[in-house]
Length: 310
Image (cartoon, rainbow, N blue to C red; front, side, top):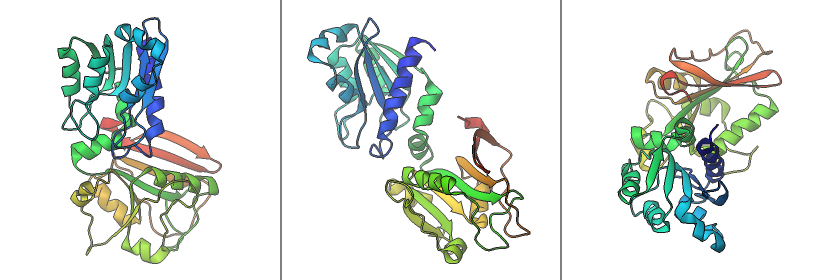
């Protein structure tokens, strides 16, 4: 790992601190490094409507270190904004501060940016490098990018299944998850904007779909059926950037048939078998395992489409 990658990794670490409160804005981290390799400023986007990562990084520089800025480099996980929104353009602030070099993790796909911030910096005579840890920086804001590119939420399909491939026990709800993986499900809910089940699951199991085993806000609860289909445009207009689909099987299959998914999370209880019930959906051919975690007898596999596996 070279120095640029090391400081960009720090940007990513900082950015993750904004996971809850930065929404619907992206998570962004910034690090300012002097010519001799010392970090003299750090920041991240804490809360939507407040200062961006670059603003907070410059604000953290001690007065006696301001003299070092003309020979310093600022690392930013996402392209600095070039437009006036709730805050002034960060590209203008970088130019005003007079740093000699800017290193950007990835270009911002938001329509009002898309390379304009980088061009503004270069037009001002600042050296700009783009694409350091690019895939990692893109992965950090998968939800934000999908929302703006596809005009729909980032969709996570999720189910738990027995060792022999059923999601219930002879069509009755069954406890497939263990206490720890159940807690992880609630953690996921706290991180996403909305959660969806089908009408049959809602009527049969009366799931609460909240975060009672984790700290955070409950996702928006959605129930669909043939009379009340999902309207992705409506979710987009309500700024819902991410959606968990928890079933049942027919609801999950309807998303798979339409290729409407960005992640699939499957939990398998490796010691539990049943004599029959509802078969778990089939994993699509283009799904690639990107992580595998084992918690006692339960294994959680995370899949993403192979073309964009992170």
